[in-house]
Image 1 (tube, rainbow, N blue to C red):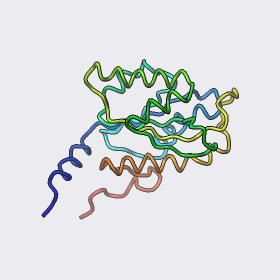
Image 2: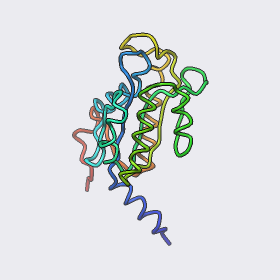
Image 3: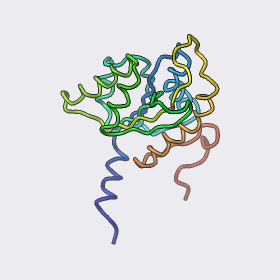
Length: 184
C-alpha cells in the first residue's frame, strides 16, 4: 500500500518555490564562493519555473523581501567552522545561527537577521545552508583560492542533493536541451 502522506508531501514540495541563494562578497577571494556557485548553476543548468537562482551578494537584510517569497531556501556561502580549508558543511535548523555568528562577517549577520525577520512576515522559508571552509576571505581579489575552487563541483552536487530531496528536476544545458522530457 503506497504511503500517501509521503507522496502528498513530495508533491507539495515539488510545487514549492525553491530559491537557491548565493551570498558573499566577490571582491574578497573566497568570500565570493556562494555567488560564484550560483553563477555556475545558472550558466550550466536549467531549472523549472518554481526554482529561482539568486545572487544575493552582500545585501543581507535587503534580501528580506526576496527570501520571504521562498518556501524552500538553499543558501550557498563560505562557512568558518574552525575546520580545514575545503571542508564542506550542511547546516539547518538551530545550527544556522550558531555557525553564522562564528563567521564574523557582516553580510552573514545581516543574512541571519533577514531570515529571522521573515518570522514577522509569517513567511519563514525552510532553510539549509551549504558551504565550504574558506582559505582566505581577507585578500582583495575576485579569484577564488585553488582550495575552494576545487570544492565548487562538490557543493554543486550538494545543491542537487537538496533539489532531489525536494523532488525538483533540473537538466544540464549542454547535454539535455534537445532531449524530450516525456518520451512516449
